[in-house]
Length: 182
Image (cartoon, rainbow, N blue to C red; front, side, top):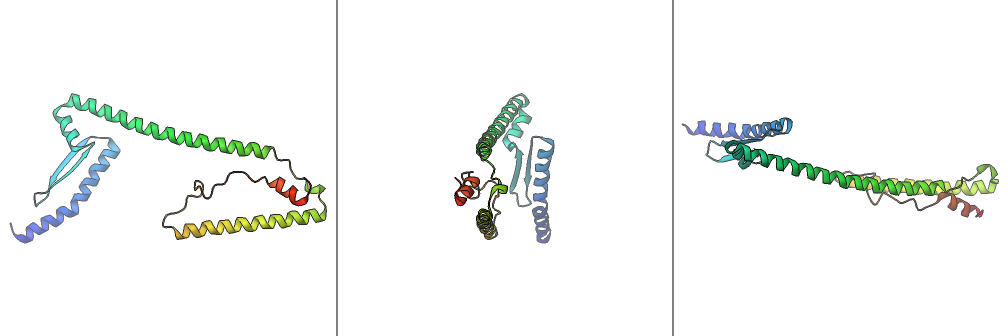
């Protein structure tokens, strides 16, 4: 064996080895097979891949009945972990729903402001106030966009605690206070 031949085999192995392991991983993911792959490099270095592990896959071959019990236990553990995660997500969504329902109830308690009954000067006050609100919204929006642009990862728009605000400002009461009607 020449040195060039050994180097060529080593280079070929290094190119093919990731593809082999990827193919084995995909076979597991798509077909849910349990497997073990042991590959010796041209230099004699072993590379292993196994799911759930090489030891479990080899034990299943040597002791199929015990391996079936272990696989069943592992599947149950996996299901339990998934169920626990889903329960946490459910609790979070339920809490968000309660917050939303509370906000909806507060909105139901708001009596609509009858614009038709306002005088011209009162309408001007409402107009100024709405312009202030629009400016505040624009500033906050620009701040969030700048924060997202400066971050290496995008800011989650709907779950970020700094973005989310509780419905504590009753807009109609503020308008009525500005107008002096309450």
